Image (tube, rainbow, N blue to C red):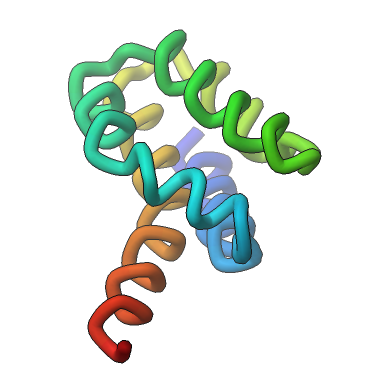
Amino acid sequence: MGEKIDGLIWKLKNEGEKIEGNLAKSINDIAFRLLEQVRLGNKDNVFYMLLRCFKANNQIFPNELVEAFKQENEKYFKTLIFSFLAPILSREEKTKGGE
């Protein structure tokens, strides 16, 4: 199980690194609410918020994210979602700092 989670962490990190433009802005606009919902383990809210961002930007919801939401273990869920969000949120902060 651990190897499967490790592989999924890297896939989600890579998916997060690919997110840019309006989709990245949409996710960053709700970053604090999104992070709080992940911290609380509210899968339904997190799924809805992310799905809404993808749909509003006419982007396909990644299969790797779907896999993250299938996790029964709350710790794995949080780790996986944070792995996806970290590259998106940290890149935005770097951009803001450089302006």
